[in-house]
Image 1 (tube, one colour):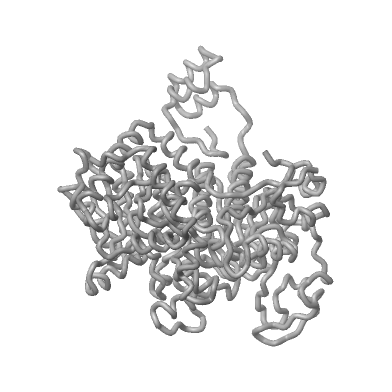
Image 2 (image 1 turned 180 degrees about the horizontal axis):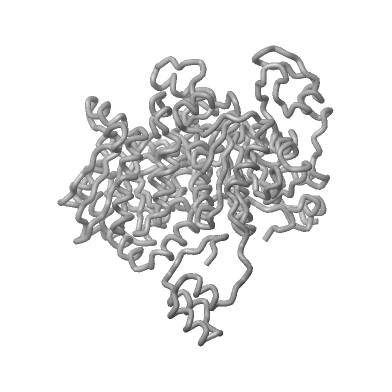
Amino acid sequence: MSRRPISVSIDRLRGRRPVPSPAKLPGDDRECPRCKSRFRADEMRRNQFVCAACDHHFPIGARDRLDFMADGGDWTEIGGELRATDPLRFVDLQPYPDRIRSAEAKGNTEAIVCAELRLAGQACVAAIMDFGFLGGSMGSVVGERFAKAADHAVARGIPFVTVTSSGGARMQEGVLALMQMAKTIVSLDELADAGLPFVCVLAHPTTGGVWASFASLGDVTYAEPGALIAFSGPRVIEQTTREKLPEDFGLAEQQLVHGHVDAVVDRRELPARIGRLLAILQQPPKAQPQSLATQLAQNGTDRAASMARALPQLSKKLMDRVMGEQPRRPGDRW
Amino acid sequence: MGPRRGPRFVRRVVDRFAHSEQEGGDVWEAIQLARHQDRPYPLDYIARLMPDFEEIHGDRLEGDDAAIVAGVGRYHGRPVAVIGQQKGRDAQDRAFRNFGMPNPEGYRKGMRLMELAAKMEIPLVTLIDTPGAFPGAGAEERGQGGAIARSMLMMLRLPAPTVAVVIGEGSSGGALALGVADRVVMLENSTYSVISPEGAAAILWRDAGKAKLAAQAFKPTAANCYRWGIADAVVPEPDGGAHTDHDGAARLLDGYLSRTLRELGALPVPERRRLRRERFRRLGAHRELPPDSAALMAQGADRAD
């Protein structure tokens, strides 16, 4: 295997995908910040990192989330080979590559994991963000993995689902990180052209450049209870405008009131809820291929139908001209 | 028209910045110039480039946002739509323009104009100059994030040629909302960054006083953005900077703009939209692990190109 000169942490990738186990969780016991109930790690995991007493949603890693969401815990990663570089040779309080290294040591390879999976029986592509990796920040790799995942959804003709959890654009990649906002928008435009649904789940927190790009453009948008959803965080707003914000400012429940999300959904109910939505949106199965003449006759164009009978080899292009240009979407029948 | 246009000039600007950066400190100088209070703002350029200009007001929903000006004008004998972020020059005007920080209404006003531009296939020129979208509780409740996202999507879909010009400071998503164009160009002394240096200093160094240090780390100059492929060209400014000579700055911009709109206009609509998508799809800096890694095969990541 070849080694690249700037290897951030290829070593840990040589092993298998890290299987999250209770022993690997940071600390064994967790205390709910809201109701102060304490849970053992295995209890947390059994309840998908939701407090069994008060339903507080703890942060959750992208790989754990995929394991919980996918039917049978079975998912195939897309774009896992993509890794960050340091285009600005950026140093703030510590060099950017060091930050990546310590983030990778916690068990993920980037702030997003994309995969093909089934959600309650529905095949789809999911892009799941991971707040544990540099605050879920969107850098070049997040943008490229998102784009690759969307390409995959278009190629397979299946819906695209995303779960966001991010502080926004990744400062350490400067303006290149900013451009990832536009890049995700390009992917959404391609999904739209392919006639595929885009479902968005906003987990805590969804702020900055992620909320101001793909996260706010879901065809249907769910939010996890208590998730902070904002372009500017409460602290920034209070500093800039000197206004005192209410406790629940920008939280999912408030965003529902203001009309920016469609529903607040418990994490444990998400797969079933998304699966049902995708089932509703599913196009009827494609009709059996019919002869050209029958297809044309069904469209009520007798002249075209007789032409087609006369010209069995009529090309598709010619047929388009006869019928007039009609936009076709997957699943549409003639 | 400026005598110093074209690739050779761009290279000269790049070289100059490359040289000055080694000495340090000049990135900060570029930021000061980009924010100079005498620098021409969108309405200054519009007055010089388009004698006939009709400004529109309001988003037909909440109100009018003075931080964004939008309208249609006659440019070299053709209609052109213009959206720009407008700062104020004196204290009163600055407050009126909200320091060039748009609210959702501003972006929605811009989208109203984009609808017209789409309907009539009118080219769109955006003039970017903002410290960022306004961070306020009201702006959040009225959908700041969604307004920025939708503005980008709408720009991406426009049929006619689009050119985004960073004329001052382009900071954060508030700037990019008007930046998804066929060509993105920066004036010589403009900056384009993920966040203002002050904001970055507060977040990364936890000390707003470290703005200079943050500026050095981000290197948001036109020359660097040109190197990274963020900017397609650097438009020269008059000697001493655009603030010394508004007429001269407008002439130099006019030279680039008229030529570019003509070039872009020669492309068929689907081709233009495809190239626009590709331009933004390409941006970023990442690497791929070698696909022969057994671990990666196990992960099903063997589809690397």
